[in-house]
Image (cartoon, rainbow, N blue to C red; front, side, top):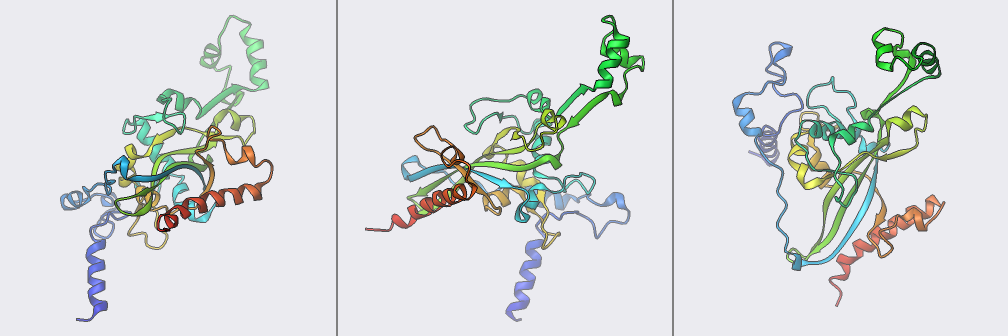
Length: 309
């Protein structure tokens, strides 16, 4: 039995334990059976993300917190953006939909307004920035004509005087999420004698519903921050599309922890109140990129410097 055959057999056995993008697809006799897993499949799927090792603070010889932007226009970051529609199967969700659904159904409880995880945001506060509605000029004229100060908008709508086209409605959708911000810690582990990285938080960036209604499509903002270690189980269960092999999808937790994305550093912790790069390198995009690369190389050099005597 040659080595190639053994490698093929081992790869088949390994892939059989991985959740398929559409389970039971080949065994289904009717479309309704697609996605229905057997008891054996459910038992095999009952796994957890690879746990982080416990780190003694005294073993951390170096640490530097950095903030990065993941631009979803870059092809390598497409798995985080698509699918923006949820009609392709329950396993096909964008990262934004996974996070938002987790917040809505209570799986994600600790949601914050900042990357330092100091100020919590409620579900109502989060959803308030997702939808916006205001009367158009025609709608205001209808209210002034038929309302007369005695009838409210609700009464006019109930009577059919105010209709949907009298309103300017806008809503944030997964297609509006253009970037993600990630904060993480680079640290040198003395026990393993290597430089490591740990994600601390992630935030989607999109134009809020009010700015979208005003036509300010470039006015993106942080919708919310989540503490990453608390959502690893959810991201492990949620699968991103694998363009090279759709039968073996990646989990979002795997993509993020293995840093299978393209990003640019926009801030590092510093004595100046953790100011952004664009606050001291002003109106020069090329120099800002070079400064981001300088920060990255400075962190990488730490590991090399540890071996200098």
